[in-house]
Length: 264
Image (cartoon, rainbow, N blue to C red; front, side, top):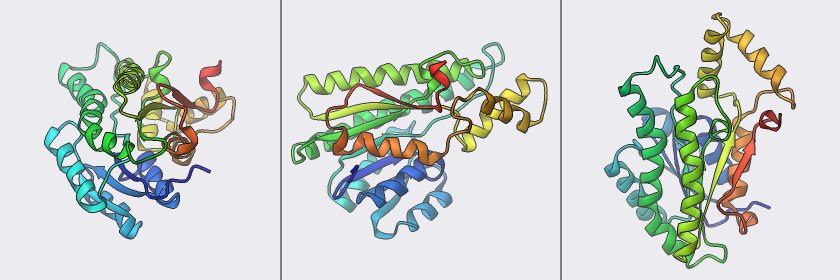
């Protein structure tokens, strides 16, 4: 189940966290992976743990040249590209009135422009690889539960992730219309135990009028029906499913892995 034997994947923001765990599970499932990130030392270390099955490339997702170089590196090293995971993202953690225009533009550059550029520039090799695969190629965009329901912690982050959610559906329909055989789906994590998850807790604590992150953590857990904060592994397993042939009939969909928070 969920095997990726012979597949080649490019994952942005994959030096650590959800991206790093996704790379690990993909390699375990038989894929080779290109790990893109701006954290060069951490990214190289992550790639080294996977030996010949992984390659690290410096990838600032807001730069078209970086994307072109990452795609070229994937093709030169592994010969094709079957999977794209647009994982890189930013969390701002500021109220509407407190955020500056520069902060908003940076948030959009990573969370929206990065997804657009990754999709646009990876489509040609994904389309080509799809012609040789029984179930085609796949893209997964990391959105958020904040892209489905309102966010009390970061409305601007929510705005960008809502954009990712609808872009995913529209891209899936466009590629289907054109006969590209590229499936496009979104992943919607809840609060996850990552560096970004810690940023969310810091923001929540501040909004509660305290510097005690553990108070915020307990509040989050109390609201979660499943009774715990999620892990990168919880999300990575979902990503691996969506890019595998087990999800061959899934496109334009959003997979919510949030411990039940949006069910309330």
